[in-house]
Length: 318
Image (cartoon, rainbow, N blue to C red; front, side, top):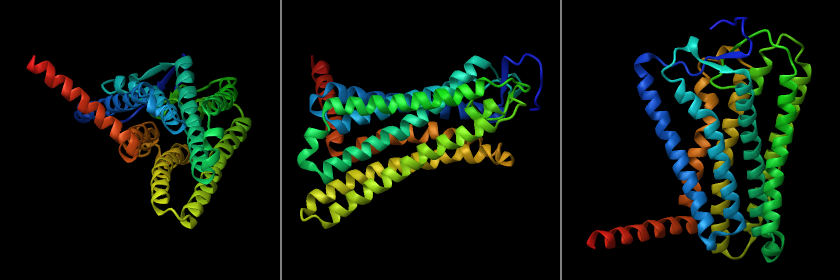
C-alpha cells in the first residue's frame, strides 16, 4: 500500500495481511484468544475481589496486572477482528481514533512494566524482610504504589503522544497492524528529532529501570534463599519468584519486538504478527501461570469449581 495524500484525517491501516482463504481461520483463532483473555483475567479479578482471604498485597497486584491485560488486549484485538474480512485498501480509521489507540497501547505497555516492578518489590520485602512485611506492604501502600504505576505511565505516554500530534501530516498510510506512536510521527514530513529523543529516552528509562530493579531484586532474593536455613520456605519463595520471572521475561521479549521492527523496515511484513504478540501472549499466559503456579490461587479456583458442581448436582436432583 503506497502512501497517498487526500483526507489526512482518515488514516489507512494495513493491519495483518491475511489471504482470503485463511481469513475465517485467523478470525476464529483471534476471537478464541480474545475470549480466553477476557474470561480468564476477569475471572481472576472477580475471584480475588470476592474471596476475603485473598485480599493480600500480592493478589491485589495480580488484579492490577489482569485489569491491565484486559485493557491492552481490548485496545488491539477487536480492531484486528473487525478488519479480518476487510480488504487492505479499505481498512481506515479516523486520526483521532488512531491517536486514542496509540495512547492506550503505550499506556498498557508502561503500566505492565511498572506493575511488575512493584510485584518484584513486594516479593523482596516478603522474603528478605518478612518481619516487617505487614508493616511495609499495607493496603494503603499497595494502593499508592498501584496508583503511582498507572499515573507515571499516563503522564509519560501523554507527553509522548503530545509530541506526535503537534506534527503536521503529509502521509496517511500506517503499515503497522495497529496505531502506535512511531506510526503516527512517521505520517509527518517534519523533523522528528524531539520525538526520537523523548521516545528513546522513555524506552531507556522504563526498560532500564525495569530490568535493573527486577534483576537486582531477584538476585538479592536468590542470595537470601540460597543462604537461608529453612529449605522448605526457601523452595516456596524461589518457586514464587520463578513464576514472576517467567512472566517478566515473556513480557520483556514481547516489548522489544515492535521497537526492532520499526527500525528495520525490511521486516515490516514478516514482523506484523510479532508486533501484536505483546498484547496477546502475556495476557494469555499471566492468568495461566499465576493461577496454576500459585498454590493458594489454584486451591481457591478448584474449590470454587467444586462448590459450583455441588450446587449444580443438588439442583439437578431437585
